[in-house]
Amino acid sequence: MDRAQYKADLLETTVSGTFKTVHVFNSPAGLLGDLTIKGNKGEGRFVGADQVVLDFNKPSFWKNHYEIQQGITVIGKAHPPKKLRRAFEINLEGEIFNLAPGGSKRRSWTLMDAQGQGICEILPRGGLKRGAFIKIKAGTSLKLLVFSYFLVEKRWQEERAAAAAG
Image (cartoon, rainbow, N blue to C red; front, side):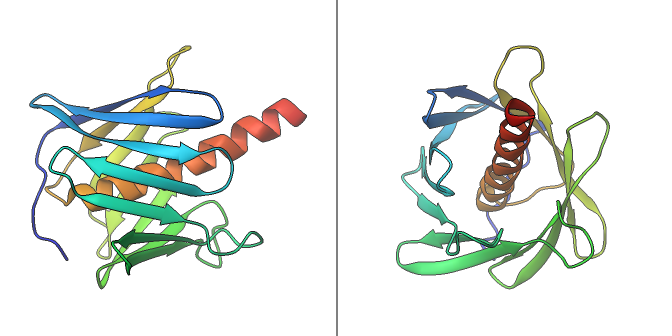
């Protein structure tokens, strides 16, 4: 896995747009990049301030499986584990991580390594503000943080759509 560790305590994403949304990642040190998500298609592209480009896609319409690519190479995949439908098991560059709902606040998600150690918590900004706060507990790669945020944002989109329909 890319060992470039990101060690800030807190990242913030802000969101603009409606069907095609742009999620800007900010840290106390400045802009990290932006993630563009295309509607409900399950596709997105992150362009980092350092010009790294990551593409996200959902290979199957029917399954909640996602991939992250750098160039033409698939560097990671995520899918729900059998027993927990809302959670994700992430395999990124050969390392396994678990992303599950629950944390310090309602609607928050927690990312853990294979040993169950917390890496970060993703929380909605709250109120009428779109976006999230990412509380980082352990140094990790920006790729993993962005992929995790992308997966949580897809779940939040599903929740908003279900609430609007019902």
